[in-house]
Image (cartoon, rainbow, N blue to C red; front, side, top):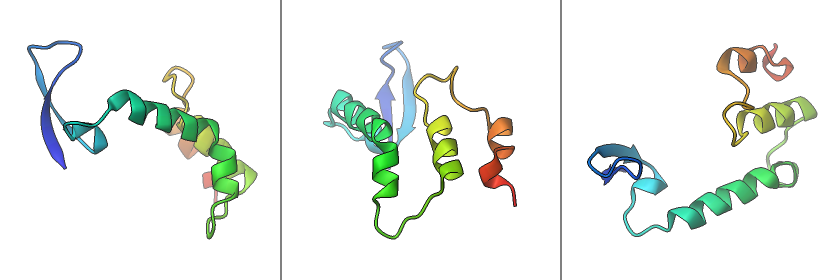
Length: 87
């Protein structure tokens, strides 16, 4: 789903968004809080998901890719060098 929304940072600017944040009437702070909680509980969620298996290296890569602070997040070139992606 695509939607034009007014930028929070610059109310005079409209931006095109996709996904759950583009739906009007959604509580964005509630969505953000749920996403942050899922990231905090990532190891539990992934190791207990039925039909989904991930090893320690895969879990490590996912944690590094989902860091909220972009300065701490793994870069795409470094992610491609991660042991989990080595064949």
